[in-house]
Length: 444
Ligand SMILES: *Cc1c(COP(=O)(O)O)cnc(C)c1O
Image 1 (spheres, rainbow, N blue to C red):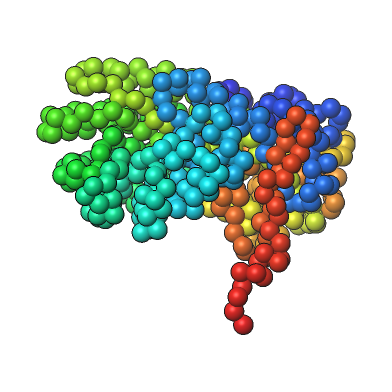
Image 2 (image 1 turned 90 degrees about the vertical axis):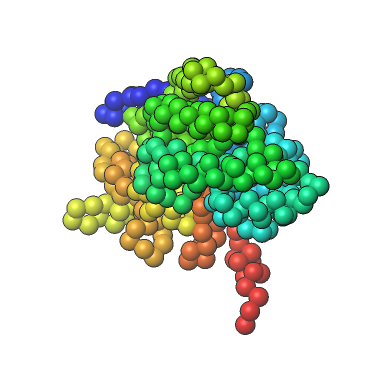
């Protein structure tokens, strides 16, 4: 995850650098992941289909546990959640970060220990809070002043709930404006300069049934440098020191959120986890020692960096259109199964699989089948010049924020998810059928 390649280099190893570690090309044009040829997955389950490499997910969890041995690692469920994923996280010793009653219920009904779950949300609904209390969620992260009284009332005078407070650290980081959440002027968290955070904390301390365990912040997503995290540590420890002075408050935990960036295309940088772990630990110890504070237990919440590189989207080419300036390769999916290019202008590096081609690579735009010009799967991609309808395309780094953001646009139906491991493929989530769609439509 830590290597930074020069973009222009395209050796065979580089070309697979954003693929799961198990990806191999046994023959020219054939690509297997988890020991399963991708063409076989497409034949058996149809396309579009999402493939997830179980071993890659587990290995990424272990990398985190190994890099942050003293920290609590919570997987951010919103990146991609299904029951198998919940089960893998439980087995690998991670906790979960959820942001709705739906994610929470799926996890708990799959058998995930509720005390290892943290509930987030800038606007939690009454159902979110009721579900959290009913299922015994470990911690609730307070994100607005009005939540405090609501939560205290719902917990009741004899109840008890651990909470954290989401603070805006006032740091700009992240891959795109829409995924920057650490700056002052956005909807998340409580700010320090205007006193909102301190005021909320004082109100929580007035509620005996709420136990404040620590502060939380999340800078944004797709961050590839360690620096903003170190700035966040200093900002948060500064606030902890003031709270200690004012209230004698000792906070046991510090949650630095997620946002760890991954490479989507060969040559793009990824966040170096080993450096992150080492430098954050050093900064935290130093800042706490200087302020005379006990070093809190660190919590981190990676989502994308665990699920993203483990997933692959497979599509069939439906048409190839050559206009004056562009070649448009249209596939049987698009913005309904991956809205990210339309939302944030993300770029991918799809590959032709299932057939050998000796044609030279040519610049193409891979587009979806939906009724919008912005329905792009991969802009500025390179595919063999003889690309044609019926070909199979595989898009790597498709495990996070694809299916979890999928929509019902054009009633195409959301794709299935297939896990590959040790030469076997098994269905985790089946394809959404027309029958599924019709059965929700109870009018007429
Ligand atoms: C989205 C989110 C994460 C995970 O972000 P990634 O970029 O997927 O690592 C973690 N914590 C919070 C509070 C989030 O909103």
